[in-house]
Amino acid sequence: MKTLKSNRVLLGIITFVLLLVMQELLVWVTRLIADLVTYQGIDPYDSFAKNCIQQGAIFIIALLIILVLGKLMNLDFYFQLGDKKRGFIYLAIFTAAFVVISILQHTYMALNNRLPVYSFPLDGRSIIGTLGFQLLFTGPTEELTFRALPIVLLTRSFGKSIQIKGSVTLEVILASVLFAFAHVRWSMIPLRFEADYFQIIYAFIMGTIQGIVYQKTKSILYPVLMHSFSNFLMVGGGYVFTALFS
Image (tube, rainbow, N blue to C red):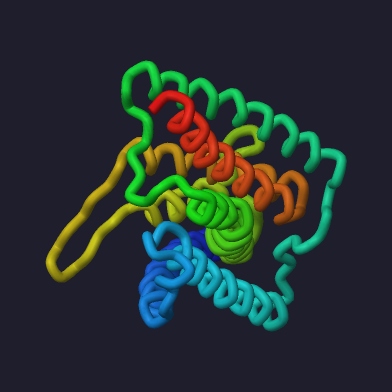
């Protein structure tokens, strides 16, 4: 029994490392793909098109991996509505809370002259493009890659869902660590490591909340919508407050 448990722990660690390697390779490969595409005619200020191409490529690859693994290993990644009542309650509470958070944060930034400075003009093309990216690409892509895929694979590796406290499970925490690490900028040659610690903590907290909702509702839909709505509200709030107070 102890040997089986040790083997499960080792398999979980190996799975975690492989997931980390996979997500870094995904980012690297899809960045190369985005660099090959000419999009300056659509997005001359490089504000959204490259991000859409890269995230779209990540989404396609992650979806293919999920479909193949789901078939080969008989895994359920919860591509379903799941617990609709609970899911929409979570979504409504989360969205309402984020509206308040966005208003408070941007009010604080405006009062302290710390509103965002953009590298592109806030014209119709850039605003629609960037908000469209946040609403349509970030949620589906990142929830498949950093929520559904790691949580299901880690649960399978450990042999079961491992509860830490309350609704928080080990696989959700590990998936949130992977998501937080995706926000770190690093390279081997030359050796470089850059991190915005607020962004890392923010990503970890959001990842944990969305991971809990994923497991509770048994659906990827609600984390996807939560992710997309929160990004849309934060970016859109920046535009609104910049227009009003700059």
